[in-house]
Amino acid sequence: MASSSNEQSQEELERAKELYSSGTRSYYVKDYDLAVEDLSQVCTLYSDAYGTLGDQLGPPYLLYAKALIALAQNEVKLIDIPEGEGSEDSESESCDDEEAKEKPPEGGESSKAEASGSKDKDKDKDDEDDDEEEEGEQTTNPESTEEDITNLQLAWEILELAVTIFTSRGDDGKSQLAECHAELAGISFENNNYEEAVRDFTKAKDILTTLPDTNQRQLAELYYKMGLSHMMVNAFSESIEALNSACECLDKVIAENKEKGPQEEEITELIAELEDSKKDIFSKIEEIKASKMAVLDDMRKTASGSPVGAPEVIKTPPAQQPTNISHLIKRKKPDSSPSGGSSSSPSKVPKTD
Picture 1 (cartoon, rainbow, N blue to C red):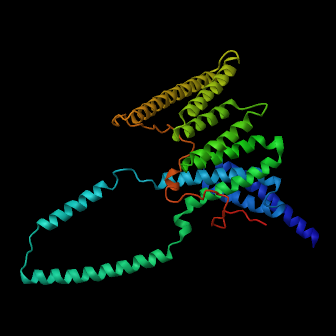
Picture 2 (cartoon, rainbow, N blue to C red; picture 1 turned 90 degrees about the horizontal axis):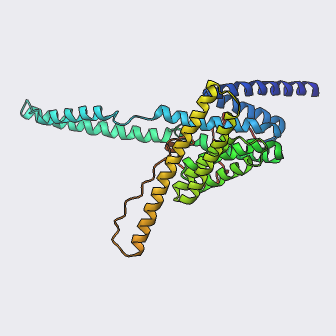
Picture 3 (cartoon, rainbow, N blue to C red; picture 1 turned 30 degrees about the vertical axis):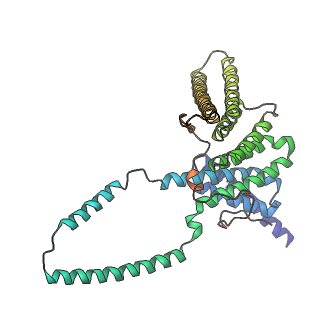
């Protein structure tokens, strides 16, 4: 009996490894639905074998959370309706209404009778429609209408589990721990919780700077996102400092590539790309400086009792945000402490002890 149980457990672990490989491949080819499905099963199988906080679950948790976030982004892109798409329909309906108003009745009393009968029928139809709408509201599955929100909340909770696992690894888990904090910060940023985003971006940055082989491009990205987060709460000095640090990191990457000797086409293109990124960051710094001066000028005029005539401060959003899920958050924000319980589809939540 024990031998049979061990064989079954071994088969499940082998299946988990296959699913992890498949889920990883699906994630990198952007088949996020399949990635979420496979990685969810991996987390369930590993959780059964090693416990919810088993060390083996660290990488699957992290990739599963990233797949959930990517799936939420992908779903928004699919359901977004371009502006003006419904204008033609509204215009045609408006034209039909105007034609109906302008068209004179063809009959006398019979027309009135028909109109009266039509009103009664319309009233009955409206009553039926109202009943159907009420029934529809009662039978609507909340999970299907808020699946994207659930994905984000679940991703947050999975990331918190991953943080616990990678923290317990000590130095060996620092790189992945930094990635977890960066993903958490990205969710907070899109949820307009910029102070929380700054805290997690800072944690990720502090961890990366302790690594002997710090990835300077990754560090530059963190500094850039920190700068944007500071900017959104009018912390202009901190924002400028973070963006300047991002440029310094890019300078190091450029210098390292130039030292490699004869420059191949690939390296030349990389250096050009990094130089363009620096230009974009410098442009952002100038925008922030202008906003800072406008705010200070407004404050001086207000303090001196002058009529408020200072130019309106315009916050220019970043060209590229860490993630593009703000459409989801606007409907229902995650709790302030996302580690709290949330209802999720059983097929997506890893089984816990």
